[in-house]
Image (cartoon, rainbow, N blue to C red):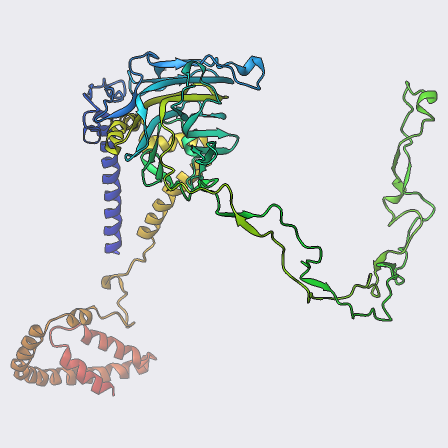
Length: 617
């Protein structure tokens, strides 16, 4: 019992310490947030303000510093100049579209995010909804696919979520016809990459245009769909980092927030395949007229049994059925509604003779039925249906016919699809039903370290600032419960159940009575001394044996003395018994009292008790 109470007290102390520690961590977390190790030079200063007694501590303020590329780049843009300098707005019209919506007249602005945590961090924002948008910018130099990888990276934030629309980029091919002022949906591109959504279809495109070396025509190749669930990136209203890595060995990786969500090889993991098949089916080959594709045929030797009746009906009337008592044969199931009245505007010349609507016969409600009674129909036990011969294996079966294979006249083998058409510009050509799509921190380079540094100084700073401004665990739980009230039940059970178990564990133990609480009767009692003596070590036992040997002589003398005492006591007992017999009292009560007096006597109980036992015997 003492152990249980000690455990309870320990659990309660640990709980209080944990709660206080959590509160202290939250207080310190609100005052100081150290993100310099993760962001290197991304944070210049963390301002600590001493809150007043009547107001809560203010959120930490992180000073924004524009990212700077740490190596060679083909294109970089952070929009922190606050202008569209270097970008070209399209003035084109979309073909095969109504004039009202054919123009690329969607608006673009350079501004901060609506709920920015980094003042001064600006980006390109798609302002309009339900309009075509097109904007593009030239690279510092054309990108040529040779021995270095291609890395394309940028940030997107769907500030208002997304209903239907895209946020992908196009890498515009280097052609003589390229005119950024007339950038539209048919403008030649080399790669299209980025998020796109319509309905409940969440996509992350990676499409490249491959040139057929025989015909010179281009064909779009779509990378396989990612296995990851992409919905969160479209709905959480957070800034996400999209990265495409394309290597000279034809391997590719697609990353979101620096985590790989899709990967593969340009030769094996795109649709349609880069290289056509070596052989194709002969379009001029035709199936022979006598080709038999039937695996089973009716048995030609089978004969219909003589007792097979094909004309027997599937259902017959039940001859054992009996009309229920009380059946109203003369009453119809439906009668004219007596309360119905002909409408005032009813024209018999135009509408015909008016008849009251039919209602269920009220007399049939208390009867088993009305009208002419008919026997119910049951399955015919003799019904067999139309006879058909059983099916057997076709001895002339030749399998499913296929046209013969011939060499593919259009076959080619391109083992380096990585070497795509060079591109010289980057563009956004989008239609969206949602406004305020935020783009930021574009970079195109060949060094993965440069792209990661750029991401850490840009997207990483946004992530750290968002994390610093997010509420603690308790705040997040409260916010979630406001959106989903049923979570309150989960919280209550989560808190109440452990408390109930602790109380039950601490308070349900039985209290063991102590030796002093036992009644002083002849009832057997637990021998506590024996349990303690069993715990003595061997050294104590040896000392007791030596003491016992030394006291043997004293015990003999005490025994002689006790014999004399017991003898006199026995004589007194006999006299008392005679008196009790005269008074009608039982002798056993006297013996009991005498035994109790001996058991409570002084230091010499052992000897008199032994003799008394002999006396009783």
